[in-house]
Amino acid sequence: MNKVVENADIAVQNVKDGSVLMLGGFGLCGIPENSIAALVRKGVKNLTCISNNAGVDDFGIGLMLQKKQVKKMISSYVGENAEFERQLLSGELEVELIPQGTLAERCRATGAGIPAFYTPAGAGTEVAEGKETRVFNGKTYLLEHAFDSDFAIVKAWKGDTDGNLIFKATARNFNPLMAMAGKITIAEVEELVEPGELDANEIHVPGIFVNVIFKGVDYEKRIEQLTVSQ
Image 1 (cartoon, rainbow, N blue to C red):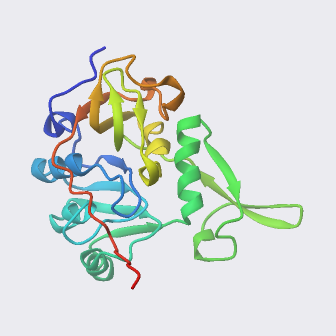
Image 2 (tube, rainbow, N blue to C red):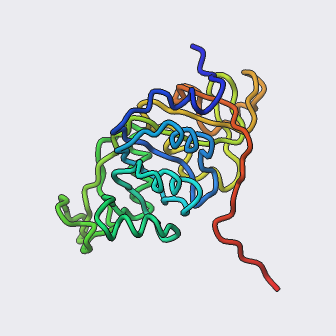
């Protein structure tokens, strides 16, 4: 099976209006920049986006929000995007906020074939509204369900043409979990090599989980917030 495509536009060509997307990254670290730009060019709409955060106003998922392509955001942290805030307060955007650990576990459960699990995170808060609860050893837990996503779109440091992926440093965040959770997984990589060139002991996601792979270009790798010492 040939998984390699020439560029991001070809990689996302099967994403349709109304799709549910997982988008890897943490803040602006390890986000699939090329694929997001291609989705903006494609103009696909009514998307449900599962991502730890919503980018910033002029970068990442923020670009899709500007174009009104996102119908619903499922996220943990959204405080860096003024357009996100505006759409939320105006009722234009549906938002589901999830504790970060729960978001990660819902991704992991999807990839592992686990339909649901219990967690104490969010018990006794608004997060628990409408959810089944159960008490274990005197502590209340919520029943959380695995995601049902059409596509997972991730960014890796290195990959081979079989789809094996290696993530670098902090970019190994939600990317590996999401890569194993999509019905179709699209991976963009900084370096694309031939099979056998990657050290098998360093591979984070085996190629069996990846359907489409391409070599990205012109990565900005922005820093969301820069803190320096005097």
